[in-house]
Image (cartoon, rainbow, N blue to C red; front, side, top):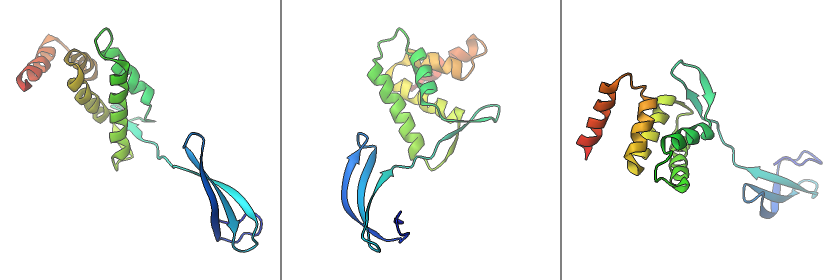
Length: 151
């Protein structure tokens, strides 16, 4: 860490403590060149996930969009907000842990359907009908038959 007083590039850490509810670490340092002390803040660097949409446009991943889509699918069902939050957390974690910085909206939709299928089949079918853009009753029945054959 470069000293703000003399520019020397080496320092030692005197004290470390969490700041901002654990989102940052505050460090007191002492310059090994001039001996003056200064404070630094260490923050986790997050790389944004870019979503490639069907029309090939790109946008930054928005957790709230995913949450609202799942909320709509679970409307009037016995799915708690905690279950919904956990689904969204799990999906977001899979995206963050993936080495890909660009993911398709189709991939996110598949992850959402996977999570919904575990929690509530009706919500799963609702989400799938919008996500897969069912054109008629036959495509809807095909999805239901797939679901029934997996049981």
